[in-house]
Image (cartoon, rainbow, N blue to C red; front, side, top):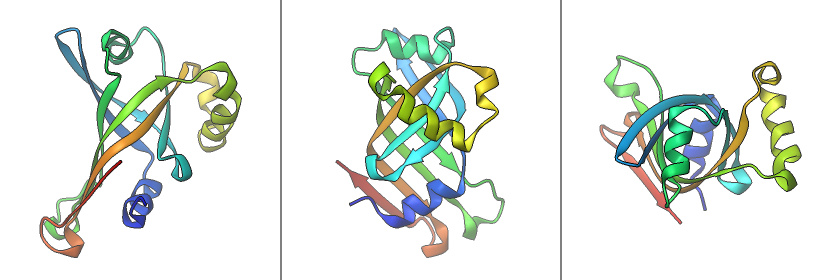
Amino acid sequence: MFPQEIVKFIKEHHVLTLAVAGNSDLWCSHAFYEFLEDELLFIITSEEKTRHIQLVKASDSRTVAGAIALETEKIGLIRGLQFKAQIVKGNDSLLDRYRLKYLSRFPYAILKGGDLWLLKITEAKFTDNRLGFGKKLNWSL
């Protein structure tokens, strides 16, 4: 079971940082996301021509890393999620369902376009200093 503290944190935010490595290169990008708790899945959009998607396509593993952070200078309030995921491009059979969920949260995204990408979480570490300095919750499949 995915810890509810992590789910609550994810739902409080809407931008993740995605880190991708492949083909002897690495890159980070930021993306708006919709989170599907029942599937432990982030939905993002990105265009094929972007550096991070080109690196995903060059990677055999399709494994990416990511993070969501609360920006604060108060040490006692620091919270953040680090995760590992498998990334796949949304295919036609799933596209409508996931696109509707994404567009319901970010309706202006229809103007931008781009492909849907699905990030299935395989591992997560959540830091929450409100529970004690450096308190971490770890989860994996």
